[in-house]
Length: 225
Image 1: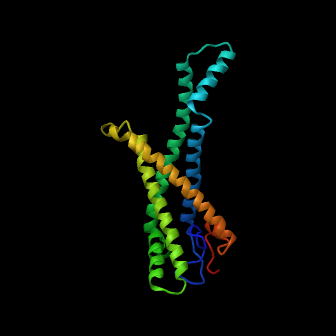
Image 2 (image 1 turned 60 degrees about the horizontal axis):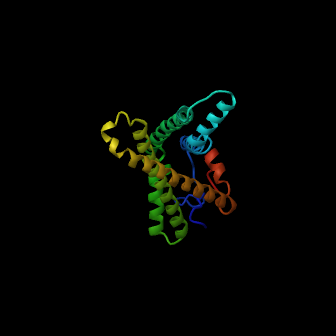
Image 3 (image 1 turned 135 degrees about the vertical axis):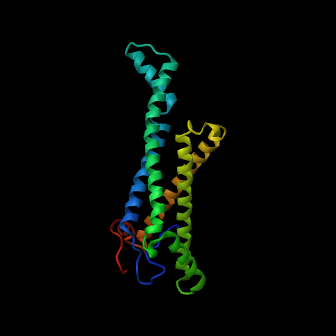
């Protein structure tokens, strides 16, 4: 069993598989869409609407059409295009912050056996006290620890993103803007790494002992294996 594979079996209840509430499933898929959209805007701005080639393209096309523009004017057009995409990125960010707050609130209102922290503690306790299925419990705890890191990254992304979105209101902290932007960008790469690892883990799990794990995140899971 690879470390990155999520486990379908409920470690705390042998013979049962994990249950996912409707709220958690909605959060999971909404989060998937929003993060994908946010990353897509970054990809578009760094490739298709990269300011330098777009500026050159604008200048060339207008020249072919009989108009003459300066490098500065062409650059302004390219910059405006980039800004329009960044606005969409910011909107995705606002939704992501809302989803993060929803997930934190959900931790208080979820059924006890579906709370993330409780599950993580349970896996650790099972690993410490039980000899039987100890490896499964260890694996479950490791996977939960990876998810915990992901949640922390989301929090850092949310805080740094809000700082950048409202930097005009946070003028006294302008000196740390570059550092905040660097942390925001670095966390993006870490989240990308998590996504790759998560998808690989789910793929491996579906091919091995946890077939149906994707279906469980859609329909909530059944009571027994």
